[in-house]
Image 1 (spheres, one colour):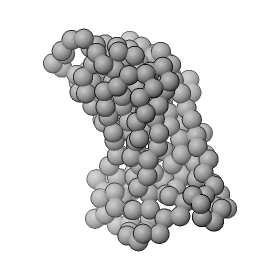
Image 2 (cartoon, rainbow, N blue to C red):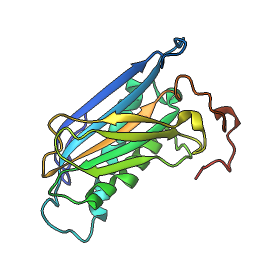
Image 3 (spheres, one colour):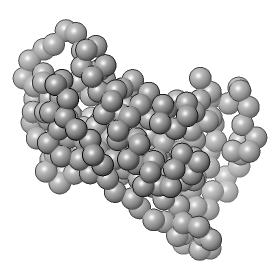
Image 4 (cartoon, rainbow, N blue to C red):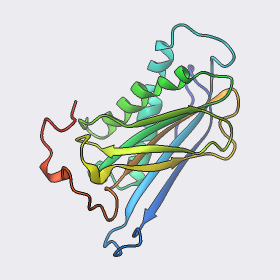
Length: 198
């Protein structure tokens, strides 16, 4: 990833990791499932104080969302390969949960733009934590919220982040659903406009 700092936020580090999953103790897949996580750790400009207007900060992070999403999408084989997504946030102890909530719009919309505006809500998880916090980020199908086969999780963690005055923003994508999904429900090839779309 070539993510750059902007005037509104200062990046300390980024990470991009991909899991390659061949099976879940069932038959080996012909093509493995790829699950990727992209993280950017930034200095929290509001650490230790209350800021009533977070909207400019949220707007400034949209480009970060697009850049993380583009790098992750490329690593997973391009937009045509992506079937599931999600987002996660870990706010360091000197921040508040609302400092991370800006990512719902900034990260989610950035990812939608890169993926061609898919219709389903982007699942999310956020918490307050310190270095090494392990956040399990929910995954859902990119075009409909009710496709059970694509309900999953991706791990978001970084050994030295976030520090007290930082925020770790993450995006996750997957190239498919669970390897041996077999609990019924809506199938991806039967999605309609009523199935949890925007």
